[in-house]
Amino acid sequence: MKLRFTKMQGAGNDFVVLDGTRAPLALTPEQVQRLGDRRFGVGADQILLIERSSTPGVDFRYRIYNNTGDEVEHCGNGARCFVRYVREHGLTDKRNVRVETVNNLLELRWQDDGRVTVDMNAPIFDLAQVPFDAEGLARRDVNGFALWPLELGDGDRVEVAVLSMGNPHAVRRVDDIERAPVELEGPQIESHERFPRKVNAGFMQLVDRTHIKLRVYERDAGETLACGTGACAAVVAGIRLGWLDQKVDVEARGGRLTIEWVGGNAPVFMTGPAETVFEGEIEL
Image (cartoon, rainbow, N blue to C red):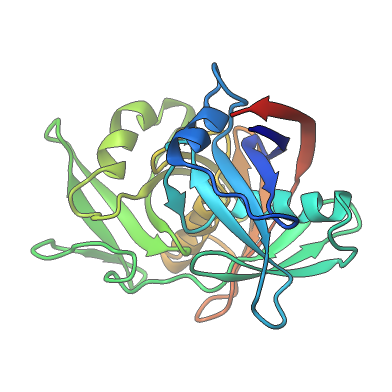
């Protein structure tokens, strides 16, 4: 079949966006993999499928697939691209859009400067919900928040903060983001046995209390140029550990995101760019 698509990016995190609002669109894992393949398909970190919602008061539903073909829970950069897409393609003229994912209800706000603010919901600290198996581990508390030791395959031990932003995250502090062992440690943390559903591995350098640099080795995607939920997780962890203020600029390799969190059960707000790269058609 011939399939129309839109290629989009948010801070360098790139997506193939598909419109399933006019007719149901069911893709096989193999077709999703083809779309995400940078040599034989369009190429993207993730595939986004936009659908109508049947839930009262919710505007849309969107589904997120890694380029492995697996459906995942959440993607902050994708959510921003979603808002630009539905507005540019005449699916809504609202500035505030409510959208449901497989496990979340998101509030998205279009800003005057073209950036998008996403209500990412409250962070989750319950280890069973991440999920993370901490049995037998000795935690180290900093400012009342736990850092957990992970044994890696080369015999090294690293400490990570563990939380969920609707998807699992492990955040590790490093002194120099450019020299951080992302390629070496990222895959080991991502597939560590303590995370039964794998995990997104974040490497965070503190610049000051309102500015961090971040690289993320994403679950089933490898290192990407930016990760919205990873930026939220890093800032939340930094705030809980006493390292950061409530509003932080996150410098990723693909661009800048602004994260705000007042603590407690309050939602995390992420503001950043979303751009259309090109549109096209592919035979699947």
